[in-house]
Length: 543
Picture 1 (cartoon, rainbow, N blue to C red):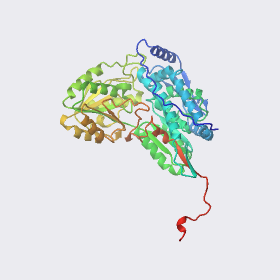
Picture 2 (cartoon, rainbow, N blue to C red):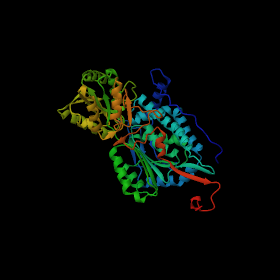
Picture 3 (spheres, one colour):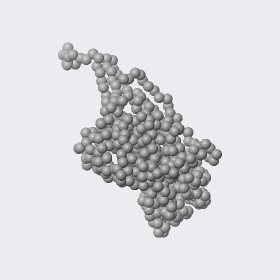
Picture 4 (cartoon, rainbow, N blue to C red):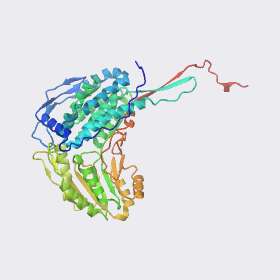
């Protein structure tokens, strides 16, 4: 029963705690880390609200301490995916028909639990399971996920209020309902917030969800699932399964009730998914929504007027925070010849000060890459650079897997703007620099625009306003998130809605209302109060 129109106050971004020495949050986080290290979690899937254990398990190790066991998760099969779909569809009608306020309060409570009761456990889980330092975990696992939940409630309440105009004697209204079927959420390892938002945003809109997180993010994903249950999420609305990608795709993409996929991951995987969906298009009850944020080859374009210290800081943070394992990480930089030597020299010195090691030592800026596959892939890129006569490593370039998957922050200097590491996504702590003639700024903009198939993030650093305007226009299609005098990372919910085009995805802007529209099906209803009783229009009369 609807008893009123309920408005929600405009949210504010969750304050980011500093974890400075002597702070209470630093002490609390250290305690959470120590507590989790003492435990060995047995992690089930959750299907229809029930913990599901298969007996077939895989161990979870911190990427920076591979000999330690955090726990094990139970591996699912095709049958578990099918059960998850069945469970979701059984509750779809009830969930979709639940009053908006009831749904909203579940996610607002989850946000509050994250901000208070579970803040340090969630951050610690992300640090240990995904090898993020304290500050990176705070920004991601706590603040961004809290922001997604609160801001999405706000945006969705605004969408519901969007209504058509009515003529005299007629009332028009728009109903915003969930999709007819289930949504598949496939989430990556690198952001706990993305892992939580992709299933939660679709569910908030009245959809039911099958959620497949990356195996390397299960340690924190399972905690968010438990938080949602504690917040009151009904059984079956979100079902989390631990299977390989081909298994979940084979079942979901062939199901007639498949209504959409919410995806963050590689461009290649997304392309293959789109192909599978296309091959099965005649099987579906409705055309599915395909929403993806994929790869990136993100750039920093530097104008001859740029301040050296600003450039160095943007490159150091943009390329090496979280070991470059961000879709938005700075991976290629274009330096003008007049300041290139100064920037490179200072950048090398800066990188040499970066400590690398475990997350429990808060003085470490750099931790481990996520797993052996990633380690090997990044190592191959570095090996290729070492053989390339047109490229050289200015700093870094060493790797070590004796205790964890460690790759040094690496800066490559190249004379070839189309070299492998200037073009291909690496997803690790490798930055490649190309020096262009200072007089050829505009020409280099066009070179940058044509170099990569991706268009996720990028930045221009300049003290010359005309050059900023020029870059903003020329690079219009090169980056969905464009930054002026800053690093190309660090999008904030509600402030910089995130997403790119070209090979970087469908640009549906998580962190804004735009993403939520994709998980809604609109129905227009017209009611006529005094309907006509004769088919004849006045123009039919001769006189």
